[in-house]
Structure formats: C-alpha cells, structure tokens
Amino acid sequence: MKTQRMFPGIILLGFGLYFLLQQYHLILFEGFFNWPTVLCIIGAAFLGEAYGGKQAHAILPGVILFGTGLHFHLVGNLAFWPNHIGVLLLIVAIGFLLQASKTKSSLSQGILLLIIAIITVYYDQLINLFGLSKTALANSASYWPFLVMGLGIYILFIKKK
Image (tube, rainbow, N blue to C red; front, side, top):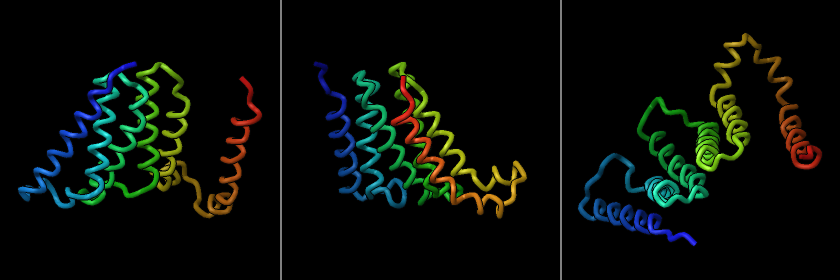
C-alpha cells in the first residue's frame, strides 16, 4: 500500500498559509478569504498526491475542486470570464482527460463532456457560425433532453461490449 504523504502535507501547508495571511490581514485579492480558496487548497492537495505521490485516481477530484475554486475566483475578478454552467462541465472534462492520459485509459468520457461543454459555453456563437435560426432551434430544443437521455439509456443498457 502506497503512503500518502503529499496530500496531508499540502493540506497543512495550504491551510497554514491561508490562516497566516488571514491573521496578518494580507489580502492577495478581493474575496481571497472565501470558500473558493478552500476548494483550491484541497484540489491542489489532491493534484499533488496525484502527480507527486503517483496516485492517478486523485487527478479527477483534484481538477474538479481546484478548477471549481479557480472558476469562482475568476468570475468575481475577471469581467471576461464566463459565468456559465458549461465552464464547470469543461473543468470536469479536463479532469477526465488528464486522468485518462495518466492512466492510459479511455478518453471517451472526457471527450464527450468536452463536446457538451463547448456546445453549452459557445452555443450562441455556434448558432451564428452555422447560420441557424434561433426560432427553429427553440422549437426543436424541447426534444434535446429526450435525445440525451436516450443516448444514456443506450450506453447503459443496450450497448454490449
């Protein structure tokens, strides 16, 4: 069984630095002493364990936690950063892709989520790029959840390997 020294070390170092900065009122940026910073610290600990401790299963939670914390910091501090659910899907997709590259496993989950994230974040630009009318898509939009659920049912129950 592998020892897990990286995770507790980074957690203690990160929270120690967090509380030190808070105690001496050193503000790195507006909103630093908030819950997204805590997510970033925990995510960094998972990523340190994943890459430093060679525990590939920690990549996905590390990317999700760190990326979510970073996303909420950037939404509050950068005007151009998109405040959209698709960004969170993109973070999860990046986690799946990084984990798949480290474990040499299937990329299909990451690629699927990446496609969905790109479509959701850039929906309006894609509609304009392909010259589609929003009214035609609005009429057909009520069918998309059924299509997605049907694809999920197909993958879960019908498709056999």
